[in-house]
View 1 (spheres, rainbow, N blue to C red):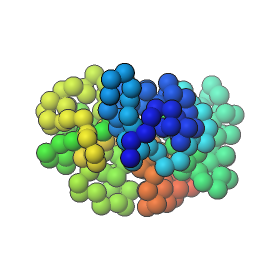
View 2 (view 1 turned 30 degrees about the horizontal axis):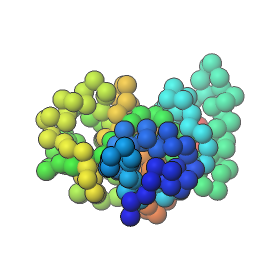
View 3 (view 1 turned 90 degrees about the vertical axis):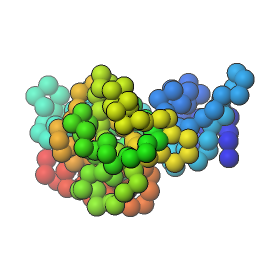
View 4 (view 1 turned 45 degrees about the vertical axis):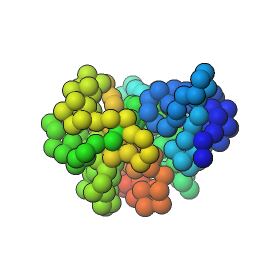
Length: 210
């Protein structure tokens, strides 16, 4: 079912402007009819954001640093403690980490071939630690500067309907393998019961170890 930008914004609990940003980034599917956008309702997140996203720098500090940073240790510890006691840490982490990069959806003839490309770092359902077998979907991180070359090499096209490839586009690649909270945030964005459950397990393990 297609909905207007206003209806999509109401469903997600965000502004019309944010919906248009998500359309431009490929994170939700839409088509233009005249001067209006019609949004594919099936591509909307299953739940509204629980919190305002952290800045990209703050998000990566939370996700990728496993010890309290010297600059602002109190804020880092506070967020980790909140994740530990929250009844739904996966959705909270997904909200905080939403601005860590652009999440782009593509169609591809051979999506698994992407994962052998040295310009990407696998994550989400393509990371073996996820415990999820997703043979028809490849998920990875790629640098902004490498995106076009990767698209050309693997003949990636914007997804219409179900995607074959999920690319998280960032300024700098995360470590390989990605830190556990990065993996958890990526899984949580799929919004499926298995992905959310595994994200919760990864979060619990990470915050206990900190």
